[in-house]
Length: 308
Image (cartoon, rainbow, N blue to C red; front, side, top):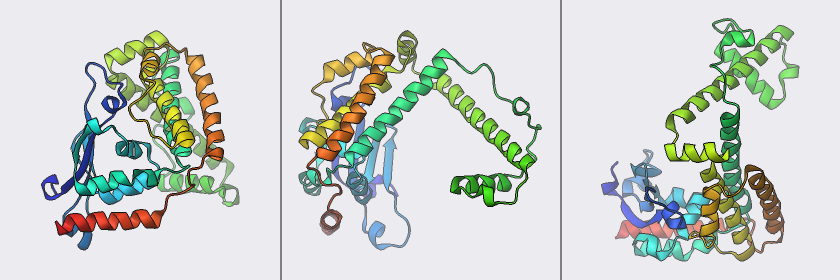
């Protein structure tokens, strides 16, 4: 199914240009919302949830878009609150979506925005470890006391891991030797994954970004977005406002340029995490959105577009 058969109801610039954080060479990220043709809604075959026109240009089917927005997905919520100057297309059905945007704001933003921020922090810590203590060599099975080829079939390994996740391995009839072999296989698998991630990181690093990492000892671009996400969480919980175009632009760019030490970043992030939890408790935002009202709006939007 090509995008020519869909109806675009809303499209906006997103990312660094919408945040006001773009610099020379920054990509132009565009995201939109579409309603599909009738067969998407009345046929029995599966329909696309999104269409990628390019790596930086994505359009979401309206039902997926609204599900993500109702779940307080940070990226999707931001799309509803970009500045009008960043809007590329707003059809009447899209305007109805924008008019209802505050209906998507709930206390869930504490978990989703801070969750995205912690994802940035995890990458910062991983990259810093690779910078300071890069893996010395590719891990080999022999390094973990394992034979060249595994002697445990994959299905048995998978079954044992499933039992571990359920906390039921102690009830299973397995030998101590098998448990030791399983532990070695898991350690080797983890080391292998870390090695592959490290090699991919080396291969795909942006040279300018790599230079900043080398100079400051951590990924300052991730740090900028970590701070932005946590501040946005606090703002939404405290004021009910989603400030996509950042009023703290200059300070965020200073973070991007490495003005904060790694230790300072960690300390401030931990403080903001505590503050997000405090604001979540005090916030007047609802715990959950009105799913019935949003579902009715989705039906109305689809019907309106299909009738047209």
